[in-house]
Image (cartoon, rainbow, N blue to C red; front, side, top):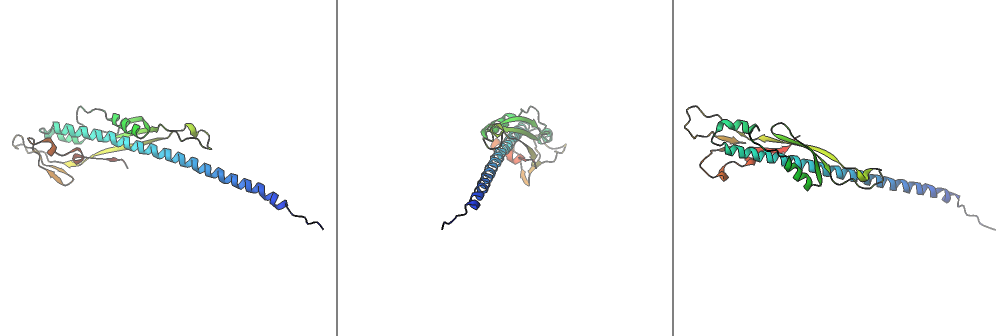
Length: 200
């Protein structure tokens, strides 16, 4: 007597198995594509942050230089701490440098008022090949703004103050008794006079 084996169930399950495995592979590749895009965007944001901070720090250094140059004229100090010093150069060249170091290119760089910079960058690398059409040429763009906060206050000199007297400069609780005859190295440094940070 012959024995008949039932192969029907196994045969029906095989296409389902193939479909499930194919679906899982598709999801895996889709997640990989999402991860590639996210990594590219993160790289763009890092480059934008670094570029904006670099531009703002260059402006801070220029303001510090202007303050040192006008150290003996306290009437100009307020304008300098407000970011309105004369003869300042554009600081976007620093943004371009830092963007390039982070594999990106500056698409836009503009002063954000007198005490800040807003920078937009685009990655030089693409998202890369994936199952999502078009990603092989897709690049990420991100924007960041860095601001400069003055850290110091001072009281204007009295009208009868002796010639050559300088105001007491207070920077975040630290008092600086300024000596115009002393070495420049003993004067407050850029980080003492101004704080630079990304905008919230």
